[in-house]
Amino acid sequence: MDIPTYRKEKGLSQAAFAALLTASGTPATQGLVSQWEKGTTSIKAERAIQIDLATEGAVSRFELLPAVFGPMPVRTDRQALAASVDSRKSKRALRSKFGFKTDAHLAKVLKLPAAEVEGWPEEQSVPALPQVMRLLGVQETPPAAEAAPTDPDADRIINVEAA
Image 1 (spheres, rainbow, N blue to C red):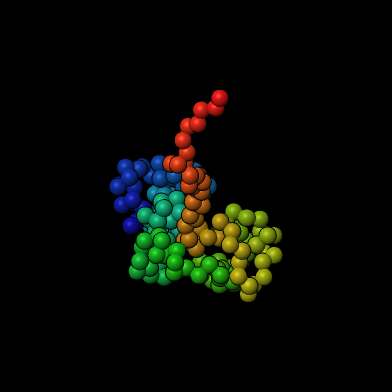
Image 2: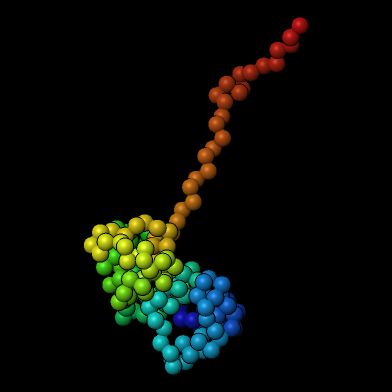
């Protein structure tokens, strides 16, 4: 889905869509959204990822920039996508997948200090940080709440009167 269709379905103005992006940590203006829709300004890879995350996949990075991200995955179900994602990517492969030229670009999208990202080895798998998992499309599943322990003898207890 493109941005104008998403806005129309959600009843958002360009300013409201910009506010949605800003609220998710990506400063944007109504003018920038207008330029994207008119095609006078192209959407960069970092912005496409941020739009994808802010709209929870409704405006997909794959549809916004198919030349960068490739075709839309056949299975759009987030759980199926999470199962197919290899979270053991190297830093070099991760930069290549998203079209980033430097570690600074990757750090900016992950909202991590550039020095931390630069410290990751090039050919080893990146840490499984929540930011990295979100970037790869893996949804975090909250830990299941432990059930309260049950007393197996609860139905056999009777009241006893003490003298």
